[in-house]
Image 1 (tube, one colour):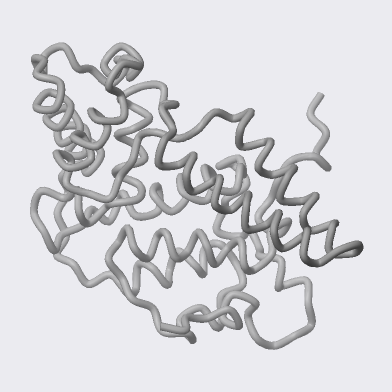
Image 2 (cartoon, rainbow, N blue to C red; image 1 turned 180 degrees about the horizontal axis):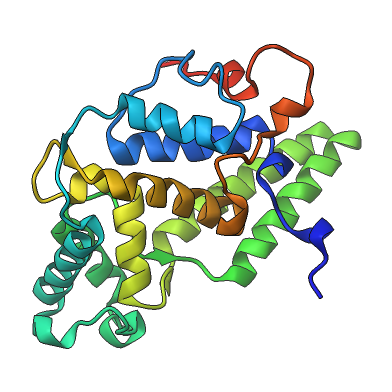
Length: 245
């Protein structure tokens, strides 16, 4: 039986975590919010309303995910010189991008798909080493700040190198890749620029929060509240983060 205390919910996250997701959605939808746009946001529904009220694109009911799949399929076909008929949503990327020359083919795919979108990362065990090393470096500040600072610089540099040299696929299937492309590059994927499908807006917002914060979609209701509603402060926690740009 599921322990409800262990289930992640929206109000478990600090405003900085929410802000990171909002920035990702802002870029995906091609929007620019001022620092007071979320001042009165208290619930998930309030946040969704802010996005809908700021989008002034023409309405068009075509499917963005389908368009993302067509773009992914074409990019893979041109990069690997394979037939588009052999590329389906459930096709495994490991079958399309074998280990040999994977980094080079991933770069070619990125150029072909036309967005700042990478499909490679480094292994999970290496990421765990980086996290542990970074945390130990922070602890070292209590003993020797020079060692601590050196450790932080080293592990940050190591992570950057690992990201550039990583050969581990960040997705298992073409479907996973397609969904992320549509979620994070919505306006870039749309066939007709300056349009959006109103019915997709809420789905993409929910999918992004669920994916990035590991919150079950059933808990992302309009009534779901944010952590700052627990405070007696009058200002929204998200509004206090704001944009410095």
